[in-house]
Structure formats: C-alpha cells, structure tokens
Length: 451
Image 1 (cartoon, rainbow, N blue to C red):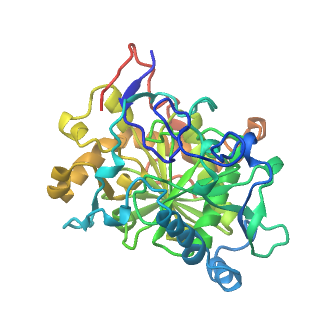
Image 2: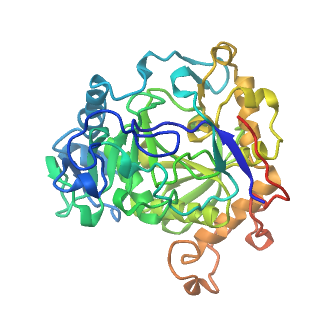
C-alpha cells in the first residue's frame, strides 16, 4: 500500500483552488478570461526576456564578473527584484512578507527564525503521496501554465548570439517552450520567485541536466551570495508536481553555509565532492569544476541517481552557483509511518530546503517566541538519514557520477566497465558495498497522518 500524509498545500499562485484548479473570480482579458499561460490565452502574449550568455563550457572563474560588466540591465537589482516589487505594489501577494518578524537565534550557527502566519492557509487538507519521488505530470491538478501572466516577471533563456540581451516586450515562443521566472504569492522572503524551466512542456518535478544548468545560470547572473536557489523533490516537501526551482534574497548567511565540510572525493573535470560535518542533516556539497556545465552535470547526475532510486532530496544552490548542497531526507516517510514526535508535528513546519538550510519558517507565535538552536537542531535531526543509510546513499551517488551514462539521461549501455576515478572514494565509501533498496519502502498498509 502507498504511504500518504494529509497536509495543507502551499499556495504559490492566486489561481489555485482546493481542487487544484484555477480561480474563476475576477475579470481577466482574453481567452478563458484569466489571462493564463495555456493555449487559450498565450497566443500573441509578450513578456520581458533576459537572454544570458550560454557559457556552460567556459571556466567558472570570473564568470560572474564578466557578465555583470556586460549586462544591459542589472539582473538581480533592477530586473528580478524591481519586477517583484512592482507586483507587490499591485497587490498580487497574499501578505506582506517584509512585515514578518525575523530574528537570528542565539547560538553557534545562528539559525534564522521567521514568524509567517500568513503562509499557513486554513483550507481542506489534501492527500499527498510521499512514497514516490517520480510521479507523472497531471494536467488536471494545479500547474504553472494556469498562473496569470501578471504573475510572470520575465522569460529567462540562453542568448542565441553569445551576448547578454534584454528585450522588455518579447513575444512568447510557444513552440520552443520558454523558461520563465514568476512570483510566489506566498513568499518566504524578499524577492521570492519560481524558476520554471520549459514551462509549456509541463515537465514533472524531476531534475534533468539542462534544467539544473539553467538554475546555475540564474545563480551566476544574480551574482550575489545572498540570492540562493532551492529545489524540493516530491517526498521532500515539493507541493506541486511541475518542474520548478525556488529562489529569494536574504542578506544573512545560512547556517548550513557555515558548517564545516570534508572532501571525500575529487571527480573528473575538477568537481569536488564533500560531506557536511557537525550539522543536524547529513548531506553532500559539490564545488569546483572546470566549467559551469561540469559542475551542473555532476550534481544533476547525482540528483537523477537519487530520484531514480526513489530517495527524496533537497538542493541548495549557494555562493552564486559555486557551492551546491545535496540533502537526501526522510522526514515525510517518518511522518507517514507515525515516527515523528507529536510536538514537532504540532509546529506544522515542513522541513524543505529553506528550513534544512537553517531558515526556519514558523507558523505559530509560540514557536517563534520560544525558538532556540536546540529546537531547530531537534527538528532537523528528524530529517536526516541515519549514518549507515547516508553512507549507502553516498556510495550510490559516487558510483553514478563516476560512471557517465548511468544516470544522466543517456543509455546505460554505455556505462559498462566504467573505471573508478584515480582518487577513488575515501572515508570508507565503497560503491561495491552499497545496497539497492529504495529509501521509502512499500508499506504493508496505507499510512495517513493529519498535519
């Protein structure tokens, strides 16, 4: 039987309803009357277009500096944040996130607590399956083609001529399915947006190489370490099964960025693989690489390995795309099996990428007032895989990314007899000893938890 939980879904668009459809109230021009991104409204529609250099193969050193000098518009300050503030002035957000109380919790890591009561929408809980990381796209449920065009800030694509270009009023190329940046109407922080790769292809929440490279390009275009991107897989608190990344600006270091690391392997093409030390959630860190594409492909291959192995995970893209945290987790599984302490469940905190990174979004005033590093650590410890399971998963990832072709959307037939890297795995990570079981077992009975 499948493992399921019941929880209140996050509202990211003004066009969501309880049944996952779109809102029907309010006058909208053209097509269905909602001015959406589907075929009924999109013909002839125009949106700003930011075309970045397709520099996936050039050295990562100096990449941000070069782009900043040549950009016709400041990507982060003028375009992304400027357009976001424009939507705030137009009243498109469900609440003013800039008015939410925020504090740094005293302690070694400086966890960040935010009281965000507006993010918790009181509506009928919906069942959400947590035992399958990969699920087919379902067009009958809410997806990003149903958002209003006014919620979309701009198109984000690689330049055709190798130079950064900005077009304030560009037609939407329906046949080539543009990638777009849209607001999250229930923001966690200032500038909270969604990057939706190839939006009209209606891809499920599943990372592939090119979508991850697109996310790294967005991080490098922003060129600011306080602007991060995050990704949640299904089973790790993604609430919408339509491929998307989240991003926002927070002028403070995340606790996870302060955690010590230890290198466990050096992969080909200069990518380093490290593990987090002394942090409540066990995870891997990737950095380096001879080019942005090398780093993107190494991490995306690791993500593909996890999702194909049915292991939920979260990703944080930090330091303008130079450091990437990969965090397999099991909180939803424990929740469905009734293994999470009731006191933690009562907080209604879903530990997704931002919470795991140390930005604790709290929905109850009592939790905010009593926030402590000990409480944050206790919650996040429930998210983490055990040491034994983490070593198994790390070995699984190492084998996948050391052998091109196994988990990177190419035929597995090309990966036979793949030699290990010269450096090999260290710290006891031995791919030969890994198990192939999925992280989420098929339960003997259906488990439902009301959150």
